Amino acid sequence: MSDHAHIAEPESAIRIEERAAEWLLSRQDACNWNEADQGELDAWLAQSFAHQVAFYRLEATLDRAERLRALG
Image (cartoon, rainbow, N blue to C red):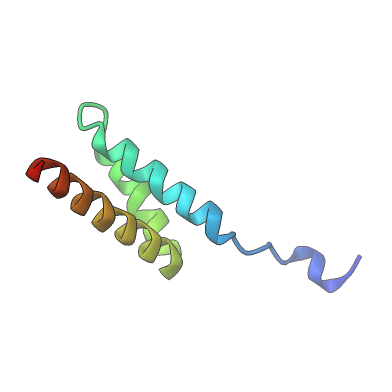
């Protein structure tokens, strides 16, 4: 067994983007979003700067898309 066997593989950028999108979709369901969900999201965001970048970038994109849709 090599010394590298215990090192976890870094999360792929695609998986981080997918997870950020999952969080955003879950959070949009305000009826089912609760403090525990927010705590889990906060913990996920605190794990990595890459998590924060992906989440906030997708959130800004979604906000812009909603504004454009509202303008018709």
